[in-house]
Image 1 (cartoon, one colour):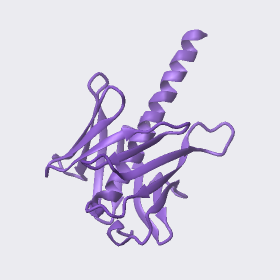
Image 2 (cartoon, helix red, strand yellow):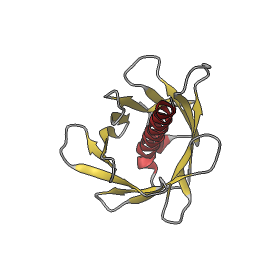
Image 3 (cartoon, one colour):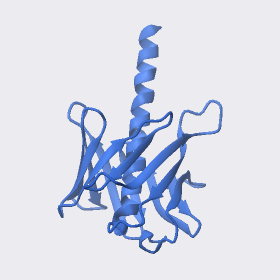
Amino acid sequence: MKSLTLLPSASLAWRRSASTPPDFELQGLQGVYATLAFLDRERSLARIRTAEGTWTVKHLGLLNPVTTLREEGSPINLATFHPHALRHGKLEFLDGAVFDWAWLQGDRPVGAFLDGDGKPLVHLQAHPGRDLGSTDLETCDVDLDMSSAAHYRQALLAALGWYLIQLDHLKTQDEAAAETALRL
């Protein structure tokens, strides 16, 4: 696996993996920079792998949701994501690093992790599958801010952003299915 600290390009893409797990690979011209594998049917638990390490990410709660990030096998949360009412949120690491998550307007799911000045560090734009019946998100363009000092966390932020987009998309699908069932 390649490290983003040595990345010569600022544009990558999440693509469905040819073999599962992992479910998705963050690919660039030089190879794979991260993977994301969902570990349960609800997609609330996932494994992220980068050149810097392996983590688990888990979504908990309905009324007061939170998403936690841990080194694989560790009981300690390295970071916690707290969503706000408008789906934006804040990712806070134990070492004090904080990144804002912002949903951006568009006809497709688009989000970004922002630095303290509100500049996008990692920008993600998802695309649905090409199959007519598919409602899954299959790919996601990822643009990185190459001037950022947080290069060592960009693969992790890209994976967490893709996880949040997938989780939100699944929630939207569930809400649409529930609404349709009530109308019937």
